Amino acid sequence: MLKIDSHQHFWVFDKDRHAWINDDMHACQRNFLPVDLQPLLKQNDIAGCVTVQVDQTIAENDFMLKLARENSFIKGLVGWVDFRSEGIEESLVQYQGEELMKGFRHILQGEADDRHMLNPDFMRGVALLERYGFTYDILIYPKHLKVATEFVAAFPQQRFVIDHLAKPFIKSREINEWAKDIQALAEHQNVSCKISGMVTEADWQSWQPADFTPYLDVAFNAFGAKRLMYGSDWPVCNVAGGYNEAHDLAAEYIDQLTQHEQELFWAKNAIEFYRLKV
Image (cartoon, rainbow, N blue to C red; front, side, top):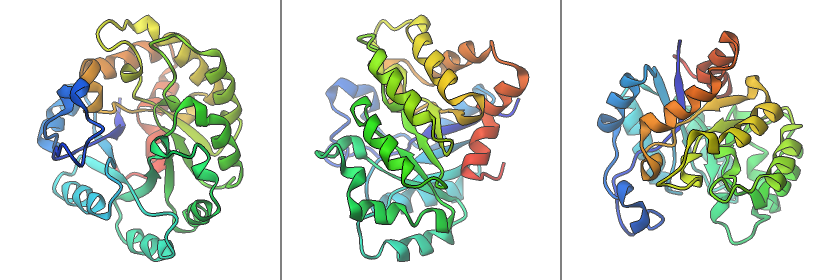
């Protein structure tokens, strides 16, 4: 079965630039490059991946583009642009010429203003994405879900995907409010969701597969098999296990699905969403 990893990262570790990778995340405090990922993809029969930005700089885009040109298993990139910039359209025109640049995201979870995405200047930039064929990855916490629902409603034709199920509080087993809000967001048919980043929201040392089942049930009931895609969130997942653990957690759950639904989850949804050439 064809498989695509829709969400992973590369970095050359810098303690200042990557200050979010603190000492609690010591497993991530080193370089992670294609030479490190390729064996893991091969081991899990994964044909390719989508690389997602971690730095909010144009240099990050250049770094990812260079890696993608040198490694054919990188099928697409999610970069960063300054959506509030007066020159946003010029940037989008430039990246439209880069076949591997599929979309963009902003680290909304790190903004002091929980309603940052509704800032008129930010929305003006996002409104241009559809014109140039780009996707948008929504990186948020559960507290942002109501705002995100208002945000996506403003752009009914734009392709959106929620990263990491909006990071539910798996460790503390909080689910009710998140479930209600994720279901409301999923009513917008232009929004997909990545089954990714779950292990980092659980107890890093003692999580069990059963810890994730209620959250996966909600996600599959809300979005359906046609709007969910697999992502490892490697190498961030290393803080709570590793690539194989993140992969096997998803594989165990979706084993109950039909063959067609599994094909959608593992590859077809990501290929369609990001318009990948595989």
